[in-house]
Length: 181
Image (cartoon, rainbow, N blue to C red; front, side):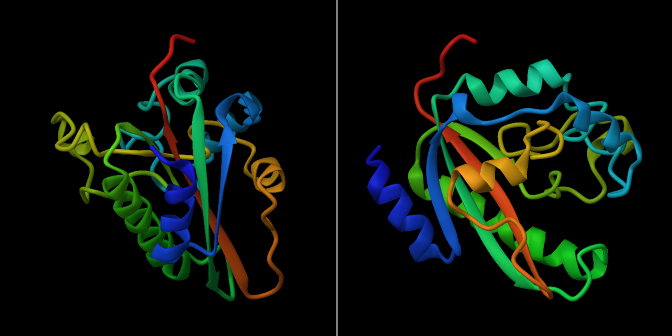
């Protein structure tokens, strides 16, 4: 895959910023995982892609590190209150749809890391005791992977805090030859 073309396509599709990074340069903070148990997003234990069902911290980290490169993407949204789910949920959904469109355009296998947990099904099949309906398309969020997003943004030359009334969302497309970790 031509990385310059991938980067250009991300910007042409509407991401505010995009940058390429080696996955080995991504900082993981296992201490973030207990924050998921607080269930502020409401997805803990009711979504295959969220803790505790998504995998251990070590398993999640290995999923990213088995791909050598990542395209980090950012969108920015006019949102008054970043804690207001009614404002953030649609924006995260649009961000994740855009991420999926880019991955589909790239046409190469890889891993999507979303701006929030998977929302392909509502409710998630886990709540019915059924298997995931879309195992090849599902994605977990940066938090489930314990990615230190503020540090990732800094390494990619992106603002994490964009000022009053503006919220940034981040996602990644991890790609390249699958390697043992």
